[in-house]
Length: 59
Image (cartoon, rainbow, N blue to C red):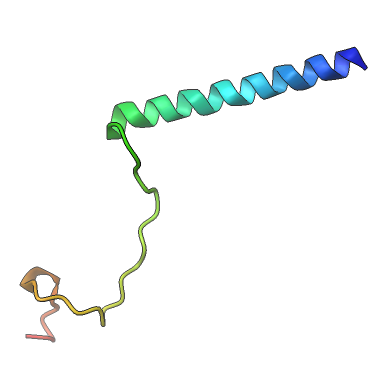
């Protein structure tokens, strides 16, 4: 029984270390704070006044 607990705790430690390293790597690249990985697809029907967002058909 003791070997299983040690193996499990080692596995948990490895997973935690990998997650921490991944987080630190992302913060080095993107900067501190929250950054979403997926963006919501905005509908073409969503109204905006900016000309850069309007298609040529709308003008």
